[in-house]
Image (cartoon, rainbow, N blue to C red; front, side):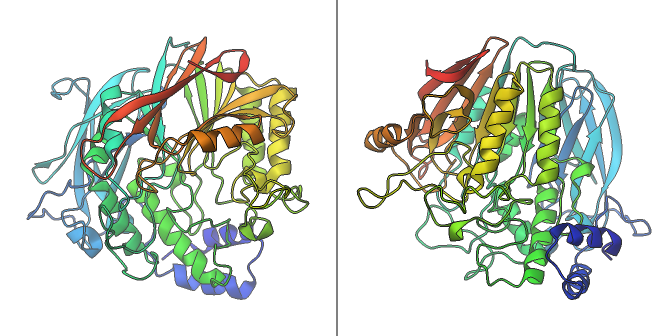
Length: 535
């Protein structure tokens, strides 16, 4: 039974639900499995596995200098409700070692995979040494998982000489193969940042590269359906391999739940608000179950704390943001529009008041050389050419132009408080961009205050292309734009105390195995000098 007191707090946060809706939602959510990491009183008998229980692989995430999260999910039958295990609670052993052969063990223990959390396992291993590589595995009833490699972050007061990481987003299973991760694996990054759209919630479509399982004519609704979709994506061998190779920092965008949703408001405004939050609770639980997240992110009904900070010594601090759960509704009907009064309304927000206050406080307290905002939608106030000559340029209302006053205030905060070397990492848009951010990006004669690297999709949208004509038009209209392309891939970053280098890796064909991955363009930001220069 879901804890009703916690649900009441969550729904009061919405500020839009009546007592009738609260009671109806509480009753609906009570039918979902209770949250928890164990199930006292349930028999934990030894099971005979007819198939490999570790078909979802292993993963690690959210490292700090002395601890890391280790993850797996027991799933011998990925296409079946309950993953083919049923109501059993299963004892799982885990081991952490200093070498891949697992002969120099440093930590081990026992946990339980419960049906309440989809037989996922989240182990927070502490007491580790800073800046060290470790290997880990899980064992259940004699079956052994693949061995994963992870690492802790450097000591908080240290200044590492180098950080290598990659970021990616938007991996539609049907649109292509996850070849980007095959290339990323060769880079051996210290960690991966995933900026959202890890899964897509729509029904399966014919004549695609691969096909979604699940509902044939509608988007996902139930907890089992969201679980099955995550299991399908985790069946990809290159995605599994990349999770196995290093820790990940993850955040969601919209397709983990519902396209272009805004807090408690769906893209389809006629969705019943109770049904919408019930479905959001299911999507959030399935997301938690599928990701190497700490217990601090355990969902509470339709709410889940996902924004957090992760530091790589004093070299870089990453603020991982959530621009979906707390945002106001998109202005202008979520249709591309000029920056009119509705878009500039100071009440519009992508972060919400609490997250914004947290972000500002973390930036003010940071001692890092590089201060990174890892978030979802493009921060640059980038105009698109109007449909008719002489008309006003158009802006996306789902991106930061839909909360333009908040975006301008953030730029002013970065400038006035002299936040060192702000860098924004962005996904969502299925194209590559480099943007030099100003307080107001429409004013090209004002100083640059930050740099935004926008990474394209892994596969979403199918094969892309270089588009020099579109790049030229966008540069002519927007003083902030330094680079644009429609190719698929990811971004590889090398960060030192003196310099940030971003390599845009393009996968030339995502529809066939072995697509060629090339470093298409590279950009450099020098510490203390905002703005990107082509390498």
